[in-house]
Length: 298
Image (tube, rainbow, N blue to C red; front, side, top):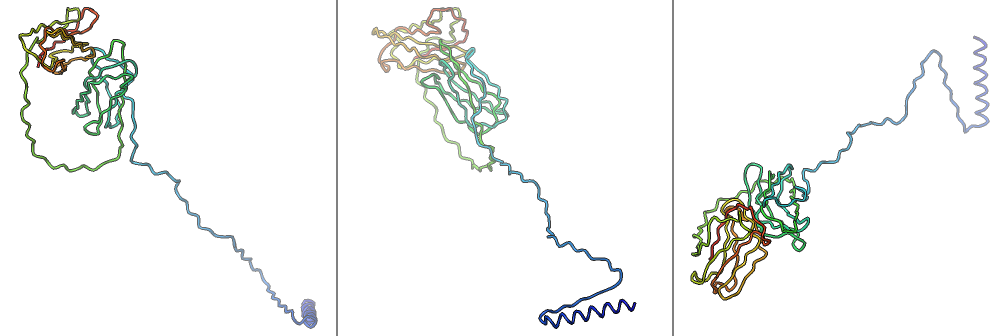
């Protein structure tokens, strides 16, 4: 123990000598004895880590409209084409587009899901010069089927049908106040001369001859009206009593029950008519067309 005290004394004296040699330097020392466990502190940066969910792009409730094909290119069979729609898209426009040759489109009937329907009368020929016919639907809705009445030319003709799938943007209902009924006066029906009723081309050479005569007067319009089935009218030849002949070669229309085609006659009602020839085909080919129609002069 005495040796330990002597060591401490020597250290103190040595420190004093050093202090006298360098008075600007101070030194202090502390000593402790015993078994003390060291305290270890972690001074690294303590950051708060927050876990965020993976980013997901917001999904839009709205979809841009686009044209979709409703059927492959088709042609008329027996004057009618029917398309069953298997798309759930809601449509607001229909487009008929020529694919080859020429096709005559008479009427288009749109059958909506739920039973409602819309009938559009086009009476247009689709070919290279007029390749497309387009129309709006009464409202945006899902379509169940489309029925197209018409005919193709002798060269053959195909066409394709497209629908415009509208945006799925929801729109609030628009209040429409009820309107009072609008008075519609009765439509004046001019008197006419019925030449033949319920006639057909069946068992003929594709022609029907209608004799008129000068004593029946002069008329300005020939009306052909479908009664039953379907009847294809290719052309009409009108022979007047003054020797003039009018050839309407581009009729190319299929008449269905209730449908009407009016043909304007030369002379604006001043020429009397000798005879009218209605053609199912101009090649003299025996016809099996059993559809019935009526011919009337107005």
